[in-house]
Length: 328
Ligand code: PBG
Image 1: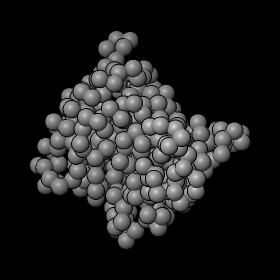
Image 2: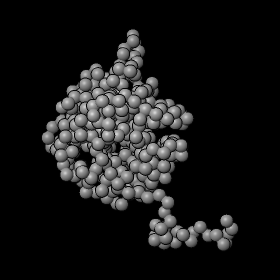
Image 3: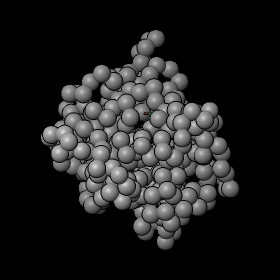
């Protein structure tokens, strides 16, 4: 390249030219909107740390599903906020569990026809201790017991698929859960239900606001014995390889903004469809700056999403889905 023959600014001179040569695009169909389902009727309970995000009763969630469909959004991801919790998290696989009932209602709606209705598979919203699996207490300390947890997660995935989930998305980070979920789905006659695996999920401070939204903060200890250490990119690649070998259909990378290098590396190495989760803390942090007038909301929001797409994500789970789709 040789200046003045080459002037890179030439192709930036008008909006039309910039649009023509744009390498990465955002579109509503590549956005997934998370919904937090709670008991009751007519409930829209605001989450203090996440402006614009609510715990929704099923009837209210249905309105959101319709709004998402009208905006051309790609899908929704359902989480449960149950009234009752227990040691094992039995609400996760209950036939009349909050997400199971939500799925049955939502899937009946014509609006759901244009959306991929995904269900998160984890126990942490349903366990009294808030961990993602079964806890064994050993004296003062405790372990989250892998193999018994995997059996419960597999039962949860089957229950959600039977209630109508188009895709099940395990976010627990137990070893071997994708394989167990695949076998359990196949045995239950759900061979065609895809698994979106949170294959690369780090133990992150950026999940803080979600734990307020889902009421899932661990009552003791933390998640570092099952979620990955923030420092490890190579280990993330091993997690992904393992989940692919066990039958994952799609990958979900999480969080997004502090881990864009991990997303890019996964994109270079693997050919599966891959999403990234712009998690609660990323959303809250941007909103905090919007509230202070420190960042331009629309531009900062779209730039944060574009960066995730440019890093290699095909789709993005984001609390901004509706706001962004409205602008695109
Ligand atoms: C459940 C789960 C979490 C998130 C998605 N699924 C919380 C966690 O692992 O503590 C976080 C999503 C977000 O922060 O927006 N295991």
